[in-house]
Length: 141
Image 1: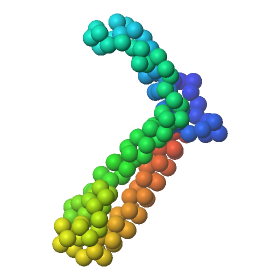
Image 2: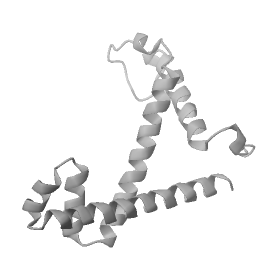
Image 3: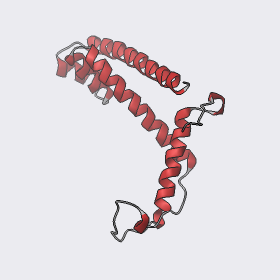
Image 4: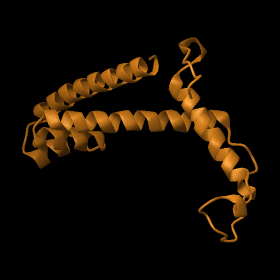
């Protein structure tokens, strides 16, 4: 894309990218099966792709996946910065396990678990914020 110039006034780059991906998928799905490379002929009809996906729903899913991507990267970095038991306790909290249960499993006090939640949560937010700033900076180049 030699001629592409990002203009932040027009919107976020990830929104542009998401719409481009959605359009490419929709365009591919509309083609008859026989024309789709690598799919072979399995008697599958492309009629299910006739209707264009809802923009709002697709944008919502794209945004969720973008957030998941950043959280996954951030958690990996966080895990390399803290000891394994802290990382495990924080992961259990993220999985929705109540602090009292995590405290019992880890043989720690409930207060210690809340402190892990507070510190790791703050660090995770900082890592994600840094990733987003770097992503935005790289997009503007």
